[in-house]
Image (cartoon, rainbow, N blue to C red; front, side):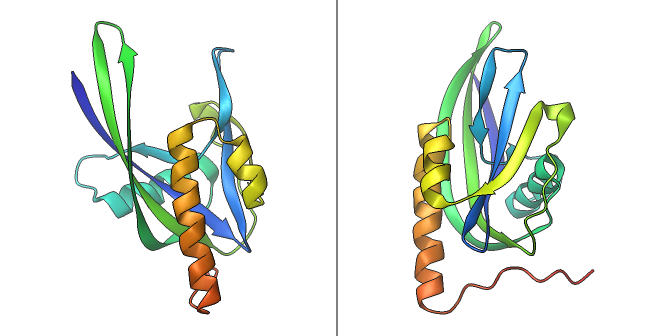
Length: 151
């Protein structure tokens, strides 16, 4: 068995959630949250921010840790168990550009009720529910600020 660790983000801008559409050789199609594998020397936050930037072209800021999800899948001659650490993130615009090299063909920001129905995987839906609950609570307390780019 192979154990793998990934990190990703639920990116929210003005109440809308960033999603990516992945289409791989007609065998895999669906809307997902940006995530990817931890590289040597990276911590989980660095991985999550890098993956959001690489997969969606979005510069985001981490607001808080949401939690983790786990799933397994088969590869030739083995089984992979993956643990994904998720972060609530904000950004400063609706801009996104899907990473074609990773088979992402579309991206965009969607209202919560749209995003929850579009997401392909139940574990990502659960993470979105947790993240959006945190986002709403922060807004209620006037603690949420969309990221301000300082470049």
